[in-house]
Image 1 (tube, helix red, strand yellow):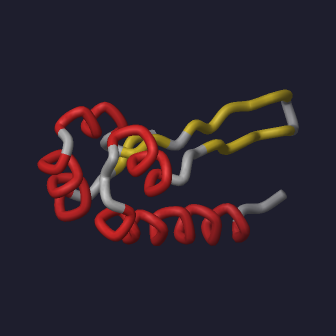
Image 2: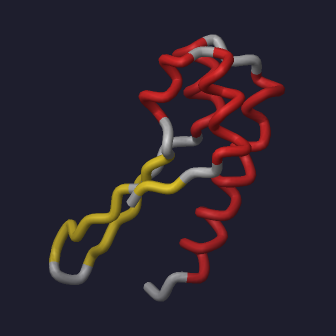
Length: 78
């Protein structure tokens, strides 16, 4: 699954166009077995700062994405 928000991504790509390689954000969902579905995603803020030198203040809002994903997963049935 891919998702993004131009308000968040555009300034990051303006600061370093190579950061566009990480955007839009990605979530990986897969079946590890018949009764075990897994979800994986990266926290984009630290990754964008470390890999592309984007100022941490500029990517701080991406922390909200992580909180939303974690909340949604917490509500998912087991």
